[in-house]
Image 1 (tube, one colour):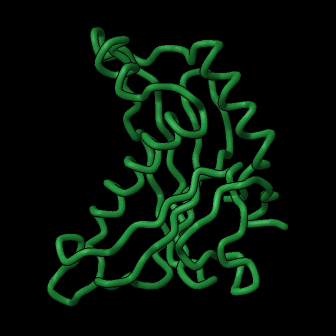
Image 2: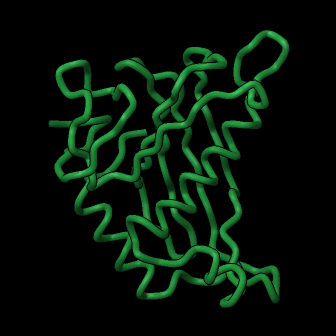
Length: 172
């Protein structure tokens, strides 16, 4: 089965409705990092829809979980002990449909490209089989001591490659 240009296999079940359609609700998708975010009052503007900067907080949370749960790398340790940061250096987001308070938005993370010091990621937000948003993000690894970019270490590069192999390359 495919989701956004990548194959899906695995053993993790979602409690949210996924973009795989009603026949695949609860589909096994452990090869992906996948999160269900409850849209809360604090995420919304006066119209009751998600105020766009809150999506970027959700994206960052998804990426932190991805490092820990899918890559087996303690994200907090990378920042606090090893003194590396992973700032967004580019974000492009297509907002296709609004998300409203009380809904549960699924976010799926896919890789597009592994650079020398950067990582290109696609995050797809979907609800009940309908894509709500698609974000293309680039993060760059940097030293928190020097505030300069650094090359991705071999161990991280290998973990990124393994994830890419399991999930397939994202389509922008």
